[in-house]
Image (cartoon, rainbow, N blue to C red; front, side, top):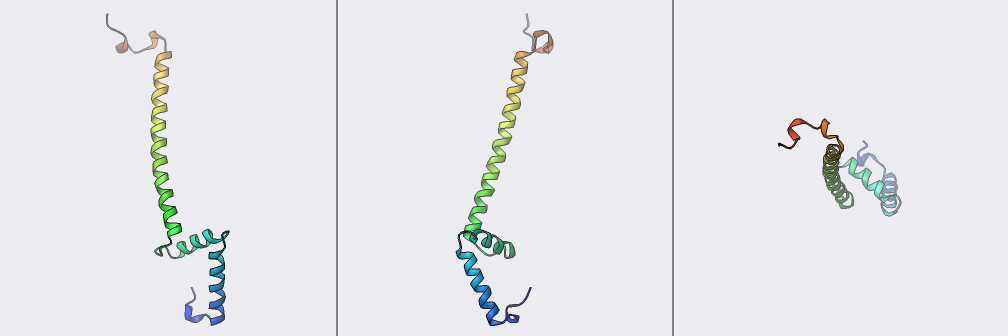
Length: 98
């Protein structure tokens, strides 16, 4: 990576102008900020940081919900199979005692 002092003044000005143009354009702003965060991850960029925090939180909630739904679906399937199974196929210990 080139040091700042190694760049000519006109190059620095061109890069600064390009950065401002990219950051100021609604079509390129998010991509520009994401790239800036990738290069300097410790730099606070609220637009990117808050979005990532929300995305991570939703991912955790989604995973928990999907796990719960899968467990419920399995339980319902087992219950449905138990209801549809003929009595002679049911386990002996599940028969009513006479």
